[in-house]
Length: 237
Image 1 (cartoon, rainbow, N blue to C red):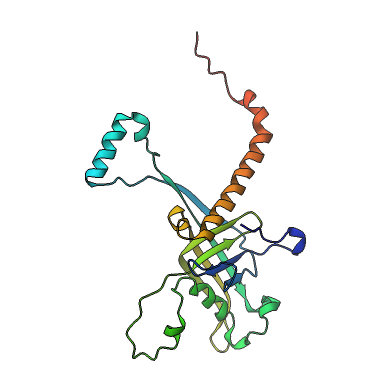
Image 2 (cartoon, rainbow, N blue to C red):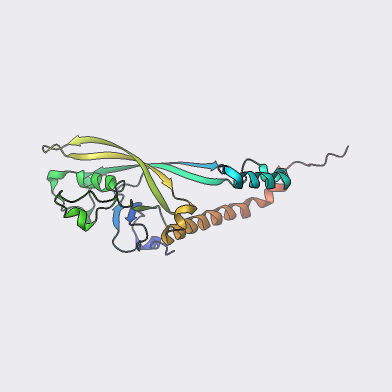
């Protein structure tokens, strides 16, 4: 997966949401939402989810095989997967709008920014749906976009937006908000989604590889302390 630009190419790194339709090329036709103010904190949760037992004959056969293979197959984390979720708070303010979008009409305040983030929860509207008059039959709802959460050079996570909590703080004379804080709850996509989307697979692999590199970097610098920290395990009287 291509890394974001080098540090010396930017004054500072901006976090962002980048949304694209499942199966499409994530590098084209994107909906990009850069953060004007990077969130001051991220609350992350990484949990181990036990695999669900399969029912029926197949489940019974697997259970029987597992009992024959010994205790290891019945450990609580056997077949478990990791599930990561996190929450960020996005702050938007019309007075500090990015130069690239400074020409938005002041009448609307930050309503366009709020609407863009809300839009990530909804299925994309096709051209035929946009031109519908209401006389046509209701079309089947399409897939929701896949969202990439970009946070620096080493973390690009494919996520699903689980919920939004929007606090509109100040309004203009047109009753449009000029300042808002949006609490975004995100769930990181897993291997099931990666099987159907190459970008999801690449993003997960990219971020996981960097995580392992960070951990190894730390281990290499603390390995020498192991002999002094670990007590003797010799139980011989």
